[in-house]
Image (cartoon, rainbow over all chains, first blue to last red; front, side, top):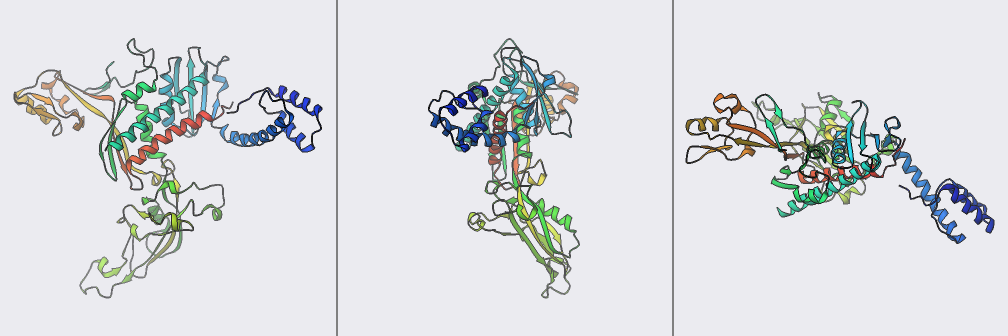
Amino acid sequence: MRQVGLEASEVSSILRTIHRMSDITDKKQEQDVAMEGGEATAGVVAEQTIIAQSEEEAQEEEEDDEEEDLDKEKIKILPQATSEDGTSASFQIANEDHTLGNVLRYIIMKNPDVEFCGYSIPHPSEDFLNIRIQTYGDITAVDALKKGLQDMMDMCDVVEEKFTQKIREM
Amino acid sequence: MSNLVGIEYNRVTNTTSTDFPGFSSSGENAWDVEKFRETFDIQISSLTEREANFDLVHVDTSIANAFRRIMISEVPAVAAEYVYFLNNTSVIQDEVLAHRIGLIPLKADPDMLTWIDQSLPEEEKFNDENTIVLTLNVKCTRNPNAPKDCTDPKILYNNAHVYARDLKFEPQGKQLETFANCPVVPCDPDILLAKLRPGQEISLRAHCILGVGGDHAKFSPVATASYRLLPHINITQPIKGELAEKFQKCFPQGVIGINAENEAFVKDARKDTVSREVLRHEEFEGKVKLGRVRDHFIFNVESTGAMTPEEIFFKSVRILKNKAEYLKNCPIGQ
């Protein structure tokens, strides 16, 4: 979701340089400190620009964090069932069932780079969907999953388009 | 690989899809939107206010099934969820009547409401954006003008029967304007809710909110949403004369025709119910093969009346897309 331009350490070193360059008000310092753990956009030289950006990004980051807190539970990778190179992995998706699981399985299996894809609902009383992806090694399982989701969206667009066209023709 | 599911006397064969890369030497089978756009087809056979019949052709079961499942349990609709009784002296209990009111399909556009925030306390939960208020106030009285020898309670008493149409919409706040052209009414006004006798009275307020069929069937926008696979009949050896007539009788009317040479031919396989009656008769053994086309889905969607069936299908497609989009944007946690 985020575009990270620089590593956190790089960011803080840039900021330290700026601190040395000029006197910065306490308020701005606070914001910069808040930013040290986060991210920044690369290649900015002018001090004012950086500060303006840091203000914006501090705000953005807060929003991101809130959103991520909600989203983080949606899909998880299962580390015990994941290979080190990431070419095979299992994911657990919350609040989904066969509706999404079976379509996703079908469309991921249609990817020539994927060796195996399967899904299961481990327990009927728990609202979880487990999906396993093993690739031939050219792409990672996460890539295969993302491609599958994109293909699914494209497929839905085609269905919608076609249905609209047929309804109009009537 | 044939795309026919074989239907035999006591089993079905060739049921799983095999259109995957690396499965067969012929054909690529990799996902390709452009190819899908070319092959995929929709044929609409009939479309009315309440019911639609259409075919999805060249699409996998998993996809057709997802649309069906979403139409039933994930397309939002409006139904009564909270019923506040001011008075109920009828013989039907509060909770039973509340349940019956909940099940009444309402002509209310779900897009005009927002979702209720379940975390709020009840007094803050409802506002004019997320709730529709219906009231029911009926009192049963004697009809002084009824003929003396009359035994029909409908004539003897006023309001002896309470129907869905007695539920009155009470627009709240800005709903006076937004719902001016589309007041909320029950889709079917003649649903019997309760029976009363003189002196009995019902007075209540129902709060109708958005929900999904997965939570409760009353929120499902469809009465039925189902598909079947297109039947396929293959006559492998000619069937003639008297046998042809018997053959014809093994199928529903209009499925099998008999031509000028007294030979049976398949007139309209779509009408077949695939009862397998023909497979019970020895004389047809080896002469006919029954099957279903694996990627031809005949959908039947019957709406409860809040939305048109085509709108429900549209929404199911969008919901599936949104699911994928949302998941794609979610960070993958540990």
